Every structure is written in C-alpha cells, then in structure tokens.
Length: 79
Image 1: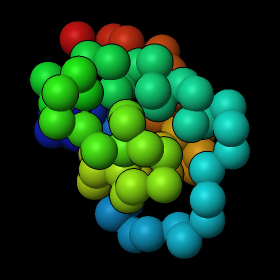
Image 2: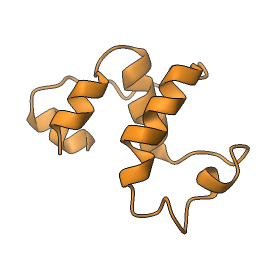
Image 3: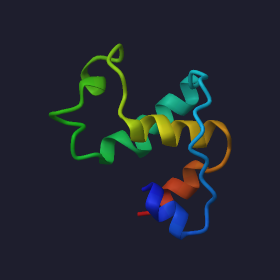
Image 4: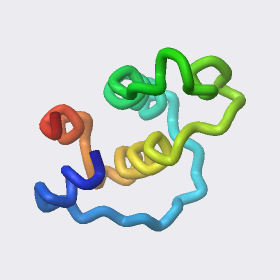
C-alpha cells in the first residue's frame, strides 16, 4: 500500500510520532486496512487481542492518517 502511495506522488515520512492513535483512526484502520489483509482472519494476533502489538503497516498507515499525510479516500483510491 505504501509503495502505491509513493508511486501516486504521496510524500511519506517514516519518522515515528510516538503518539497513540485516536479511536477514530483505529476504527478507520481496522475497516480500511485490516479487513483487507490476508493475515487478519487467521494469523493476526492484534485482531484477536488488542493488547498485542499491531503490525508495522497498521502503525505506519495510522501515523499517516493522524498526520493527515493521507486520508481514508487516499487509501480507497489505492485499490
């Protein structure tokens, strides 16, 4: 997904913010990212237990959403 964003001209910062995501971002990530992930149904510890650490994709896309580098529309446009 990040590669597609870069190819579409999005500037991506890989600097970690260190802030927790808001509930709105977390819900949006689960809907837009997690449900389309092939690991979600059977192999995602985070899907089963929210105390488990999320994957790097979840963290990066969440940070990009929080910083308004990308929007939910951008995520949908990358399909």
